[in-house]
Image (cartoon, rainbow, N blue to C red; front, side, top):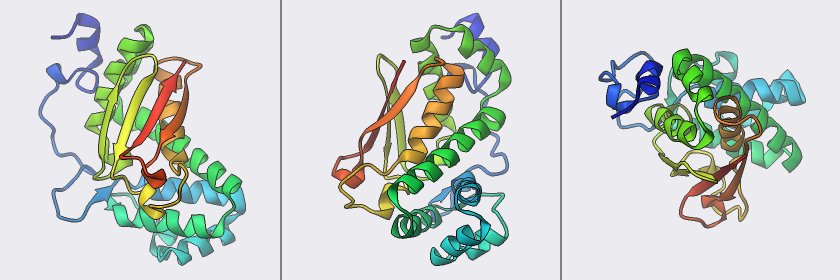
Length: 225
């Protein structure tokens, strides 16, 4: 059961009070192709355009076989394999500092999208009123309801605490370089940091402490404040 403040936040903040999913536009369709929200593609495109220019960004999309996404940014779910292909091409052509900068910029923009479209404003008001750990617990529940927007068919889970831990297993980004030997998920790190800074603690910091690309069972992120 939840208290009055949490009930006031609506379905995204309280699974016990949530209405059944309505199957709204853009949500998983149940087909056999793993899919992910379009932010994972067009936010990277926007970040590339800002970082290296439109012409260079277009060439990288072409190298990934995704010219169609560059010319017509997707507005609905895309195959998760497209995200893997894009990150593989970017890792092959960009130096590490540029790749990190692009990924973080795109991740922050995805966090802004989730704040604007996937977490109701009443829920956000309540989260900001709560102590950090309870707020983190409710935010993780809300993120889990829409994990497909950033993790595709990957498994997402989290545990609120000091630190708070978030896990993505089988996501599309680490699959771009499954034996890289170092963490790859700056996009997710920035997404999580943006959400937690706005809704949980203004000084929240996220870091990836384990990555499947570095041999871990899952990609694990720690949020501290």
